[in-house]
Amino acid sequence: MRIKSPLRFTILIVTILIVIWMFYNFIIALQTGEKFSFFGNGLSENVHTFVVAGVDEDGYRTDLILLCQVNRKDKKVSVLQIPRDTKIDNKRNDKKINSAYYSGFDVMSGEIEQVTGLEPENYVMVGFDGFCDIVDALGGVTVDVPIRMQYDDPAQNLKIDLQPGKQKLDGEQAEMFMRFRKNNDGTGYPEGDVGRLAAQQTLYDAVADKLLSPVGLFRAPAVLSAVKKNTETDFSGFEIFGIMKDVMIIGKDNIEIFTLPGQGKYIGNISYFVHDKAATQQLIQENFVLDEE
Image 1 (tube, one colour):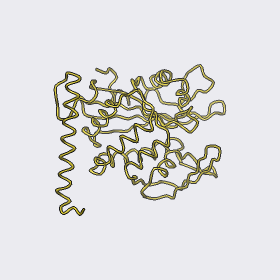
Image 2 (cartoon, helix red, strand yellow):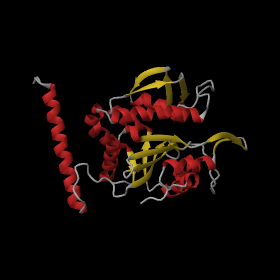
Image 3 (cartoon, one colour):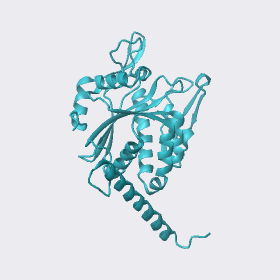
Image 4 (tube, one colour):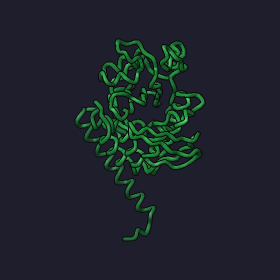
């Protein structure tokens, strides 16, 4: 069947989505006793802090750690990238924060609080296969690859092969981009892990741009399905939906991504990222809410 008027068809779809949205919020209002709102009520807290982490192939370590805070009251989202090699004080032989996940969320939450002063209330753990599915659900994202990326690790079944330059990445290529640390010859980002975090941030921006675009609106159900399929979380389905909705309402212009202040150091022949406590405290105080309501 040929659609004679794409504009009318688009208006019809949007109208259907609006009706579904209003019905969903009406049901939630009935269940919770909260006042009905077209925009919905999302999470009950004005400020909610949680961690999103990318789990590596063996399922023991978090290759990616993002401390996220959705501030509905001030209409902003703040995200802090925590380097995987951040040195922390613990009773384990491994003093890097990326090994905390193996001991459970409570341990991981405590070590994030040790570094930032903020204790995440919930977690979302995403395997790299899941990240691949999420990007594919969005139809790919456009990213400027800063350097040549070529790395092989048969033990992890990992093959990275990306040319530099602006290009559209599918899920598999986006996973390569996220996981890249160094080339086969030892070269990599000039700034080391800090450069890696900066590059990853461009990918987050690309995903946010796509998700909050008209195309992203129509792909939102597929993205939500990919998220639910590939994540381990203590959020309920309604809470995940509420967070996604809150972020969309807040908008990309009010999303800020920061990187934990500090520098790389070798301690006992082991490479660590040592955070700057004073600079971290200042960053948190200026951009996050410590006493959540």
